[in-house]
Amino acid sequence: MRAQYYDTLIVGAGLSGIGTACHLKQHCPDRKFAILERRDRLGGTWDLFRYPGIRSDSDMFTFGFSFRPWNGDQVLADGSSIRQYLGETAQAFQVNDHIHYGINLTSASWCSSEQCWTLSGICHGKPVTYNCRVLISCAGYYDYAQGHAPEFSGVDRYQGEVIHPQHWPEDLEYAGKKVLVIGSGATAVTLVPALAKKAAHVIMLQRSPTYILSMPGRDRLLSLLKRFFPERAVFAFARWRNLRLHRLMFKAAKRWPETVRRLILRGVRKALNGHADMRHFTPEYQPWDQRLCAVPDGDLFEAIKAGRATVVTDTVDTFTTSGIQLKSGKVLDADIVVSATGLRLQLLGGMALTVDGEHVDMRNRLTYKGVLMEGVPNMAWVFGYTNAAWTLKSDISAGYICRLLNHLQERKLGVFIPIDREGCKAEESVMAALQSGYVERADEILPRQGTRYPWRLLNDYERDRKILLKGELEDEFLNFYPPLRAGDRKLEATATNPV
Picture (tube, rainbow, N blue to C red):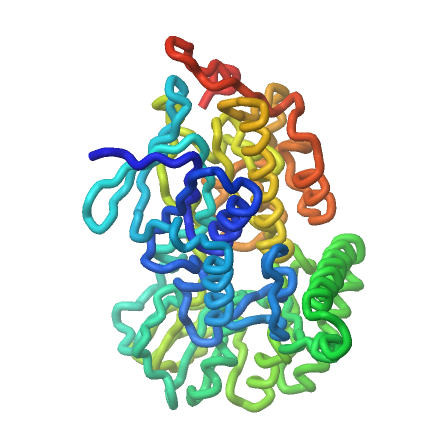
């Protein structure tokens, strides 16, 4: 079996993968690259999830690509619109021909004696092998095969249907039925109002409340501005405005948490207008300790006020034949139970990573500027923000990678490798800013934060943008090596920082 060779391989054809490929087409036009996608279509998250009401949880003007702005007036776009946007972007930048579908990668191995990555996997039941000089992981951070599914007592005797949103049946008929949604995160608050349009009644069962913000479904100001100004200028303004509003809100939440908390809860109280007990919407934690949930035009609150949906705060004791019995003793009957209980995290799309035959334990690694992996040669990963739109960070990360690749070519270098010689590793993970359950469950697999930059995340778009797109490429932490000649020894960098 002969390996296919490329200068650069991108793992994943979702939002990050398509965006990174578009950056390569623009800034590294001579580089031979391919995108390896395990599924049969592009889109990643936005092709996998098909549950009713699926939409972005960030506004589309910051969620869209900087090089191809979102040109609609939807603030929180639905899944099909986002899939279409990704497809049109791939077509506009001629990325489609670079995608290899159905490639389920199992391992990626770096060989210093050849300065080369070897990727192995399965394609439609047959083994495949790829070689590349530079590997870029754009596979996101969760397991596409399955979501987080707690083991509920008595679920085997339940006579209704139990569904996880990650595997929503296309033919599920829920009209006129009683539906119970377990969860209170972005998926749950999206599902409840969407299901409530047809279901007899929907109950959202939550263990604890989440902060919920109502946002306009459409940006009417932009519709007005487009009458007088060029469309591109209008959407550039929308992106600039929303970036600053989001950053201002995040900073305010961290500096004056009680004030921001009161403002959010005041908005919820006004939206509900006495139709629900506020204890179901009053979290014990402070704003932005976990991600906030956004609902367009207050659709969740409207469903509650109309009597089509109810929120219950309690925990599951056991399933019964007809529903769920709670720890409080109350019984909730349901024809369908939707377990919106979160994600199961997985890094690098599940690939096993080795350097010169030694396994790389991601939990004991730092990330350099949030883009490169400590002690791992010629590898980058594109990982978005957890406190803002994912694409903001993935976009500038891709721009930084292109700068780095061009630097290698201009200087006639073969390898880059970041090394922490000062022992900067701390115990908190790269996602420690969030206290969400899925983050805590995955602590054992996530890379660590460092005690200082560049090993510590800034989570600040303006600062990251300046550093990644304008800052110096060479420093005391990032090591470069020339291409190997015949007879050269292996890189000695990994001996400085053992795998």
